[in-house]
Image (cartoon, rainbow, N blue to C red; front, side, top):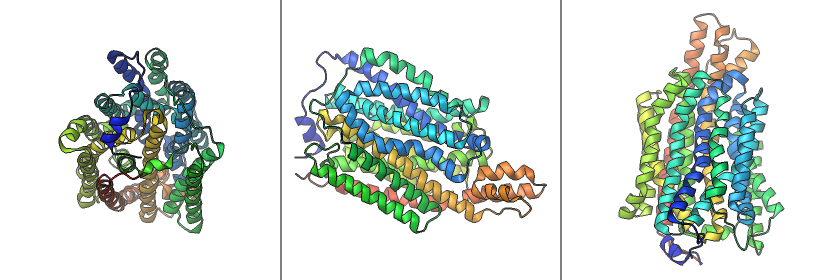
Length: 514
């Protein structure tokens, strides 16, 4: 029987290693924070590097989205299989394999000479990244068997992730101020070396004593489903039409086939019955939609600051720092607030904060007002901090400790799908608004006109080909066209956040079912 959070905590036995002292547990947590910090920095750094990558590699609008998306897309497809494999072969072992590969391929990505090479490298980084994140969270679940210690450890885990997101713009801005865009990928090497040294010494190995067998058909089904769904959404938002609908429908059908296969197997790779637990499902919903709102906002705001306002990468990072810092502060205070007001109340409040943040943009930022955009981003950051910490705790507390790898993988899948969908949906809406509203001078050569019509970075790249005042007119039109999509994206995101708050509130009031 799936039970509520507090009941589940009471029945889970202490499965942490017997020789793990309190001091060793917290030192192990410190070692595990290095890869968490890296992946958080990596996500926000890349958003800031997009303008530099656009100028250096001259990717198309679709290639820009794939450079951003492909990592999270591959990650989303492989998290559940890698979580299951980690339960089987050892979570520390798969963490070390993933960290080594992540560092090596990131270093290679720094020297990509084309958009295609960078997309391929990002995809391979996603393969190794899928080994890292579920391993860190599942190791925390098994190291900290005490509910109070675990909740604090997860709050630190979430705050580290938020801290990495806050550091990303500053570190990325400083690097891009002085070095080429490839420097943001080289960050992986110095950050992951401490993990590779400390983890074998401090982090105890753990695995599921009765693991599910590796199921190749299930792995292929979940990868195909995630790829088709996200690609279908991207194409639907970009071009529309029957082909995109067919791809999306095929992805959903493949996902259903995956679910049916898990229900029929005596030892499924993923026990989909976990979703019947209200705390588990509500935590996933809060996880996915909070990240959807944050990543979508970050993608737009980072480009607005650099390409519309003309800020340097470092200055843009400083502008965004207050909003990202609020994510850390509210994440650390969420545990205390939950003790006083209950976890569901704090989670729902966080989701409503996200809605209010986008509402501020919808009401006051449709003309690209920087004050309204930064204020909205700060409110969204605070909301994400409140919702994320408690959603991860709800997810892990809803399952037995031996299945922590699978539960962590599902949690991270929701996170990555939220990141992909935030970029795909909100990014595609912004792109469509840009193409609809930009005015390209007739005297531009055909290939330059296509580039200017595709992205704001493309317009800035070809503007020097025009004499004045045509160049200034193109840039003014392109910047206005980029900002024209803010109203539509804010309305979509705000409506989703309100809906999520209602769904989570109702789910956590619903008794668990057998």
